[in-house]
Amino acid sequence: MMAYYAFLERLAAGVGAGPDQAGIIVAVTQIMSILGAAIAAPVAARLSILGPLVVIALAHALVVLVATSTSEIATLGIFAGLEGLTFNFTLPLMFALAAEIDHEGRWAAALGGVFTIATGCGPIVGGVLVETTGYLSIGWLNVATTLPAIALFVWVRKMNQDDGGSGAAST
Image (tube, rainbow, N blue to C red):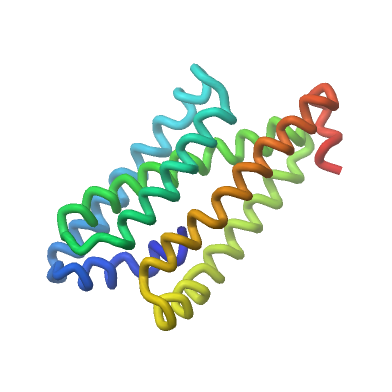
């Protein structure tokens, strides 16, 4: 995601958006990000953590794939907004899952570190990909990394439940 977001303005310019339109696209992404974060907890409280996390993580990967493959300003604007919504929907759920698995907070702390590393490395990796293969490679990388992440979420959650929810899976 960080590689995608770092190049969002360049994606907008690439589909013909002027500076004002690119600014609107980025602003819509931010507004939708707030909405995504705001609805995550009520949805998880009603349904569960893992189900919505898996569905929205998959949706996020597909949204980024569409956003990096479009040649239309309006499509990019819509999918950029959906990217903000889906990404920021998943964040609270990932932290909630980490807290559920490890009551001592080690997994949540590790998640914060991973997010920090991704924030720094994503644009670098994305820049190399964009220069060598184009923007669509960011979308495919997102799909390729989302699938094992979802498998890991499910596996760790299952391990924790098999332990009786003691958090022992985190050691």
